[in-house]
Image (cartoon, rainbow, N blue to C red):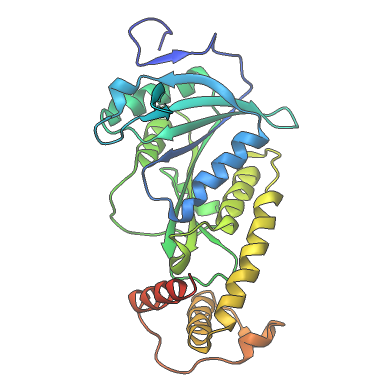
Length: 304
């Protein structure tokens, strides 16, 4: 695609010469439990010193009656209108690796046009690999490491990734459409990473999931980024959640049920861990995920 007039984007200056950059995508509006993918992207933007490079035409891709702009009102004065628009930013890690980041709202329309435009730009910018970010509620306890699942059109790549692989027909987000577009244009190193957020925490921030996504991106892309700020937030939240659970025997039992179910699916041996809480197991019938979610939601309401 030649850069010129009549295109659905504008470039901040000129397209730079980049050295096989990684393109990371996180578009708001699709599934992102606890805002984990958004937190991961914010960390990446900050760590990489990313600046705007390409801005997509909002009137082409965004329905502003469904996603209204923000009016900045100060003492009755309408000072500005803030538009939410997809854009590509460019940054670089401390080792000199170029990184592109596709951020902003998921387009409301013209998905094929948007995906084609982004993939053609990716080819022009010599993108080597593409990584998408997301998060979804999962039946896991907060006392276990955050799991990841993956998606990719590249079967060989999926086979060699150490993440969960699911078989299901579900509504697709634009990130999945981009995976296909990139793959068919020769960018075969393409993967979507999904953090598994404990379902009873999905409505609140869960920095452990954001940190896990950042670390996975750093590993796959071979870039240097620091997830320690998110890890510190996760440690503080873990202490608070543990205390809330320990103060209520019913919810402590519920958590242990989740731990047992989680460990059994992974073939874990609870007796081999130095975890005194794990030795006291609830032996009743395991409730459904809906029952567990309702229990913890009520618990959190009671705790304000």
